[in-house]
Image (cartoon, rainbow, N blue to C red; front, side, top):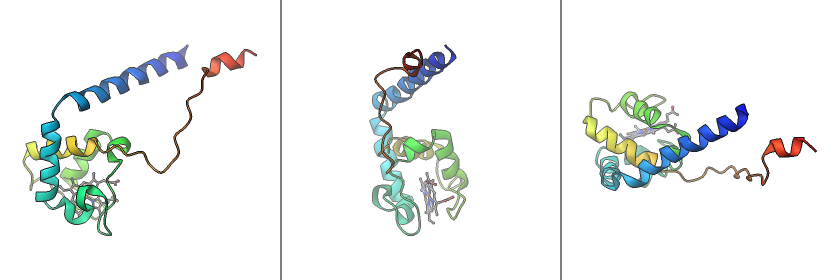
Length: 125
Ligand code: HEC
């Protein structure tokens, strides 16, 4: 029962997480793509964030990192990346985060197949 509840929570959380991304602000995402170019992110992360030898590939970042984690990396930098907290307007940071959080290319790991039956069904037999 606890497992079912957790599953339901996860499911509803992901529904909540996905909807706004689709519904709101294509504009903000496009603005973020512009900021990405104009503020020099591209210099290290490559066109569209595909990565260079100066900065990692960001495709899939929206799947791996939550928005506030992305925002923190942009504001504070770290690991060889300069902080952008002072160089960017709060709006621009938000647009970048919106843009990067849509980058959800699946990682190289294969997807787990979804089982037909819930595990609890099988344990009874
Ligand atoms: C001087 C090169 C450089 C610039 C400019 C730069 N980055 Fe980075 N960025 C890096 C490096 C290097 C890392 C890896 C940091 C680490 O491994 O801890 C990184 C990491 C990141 C990450 C986390 C990715 C991951 O998987 O660890 C995000 C998100 C990010 N950068 C976004 C941006 C954005 C947005 C901009 C523009 C505002 C930007 N970066 C500008 C070099 C740069």
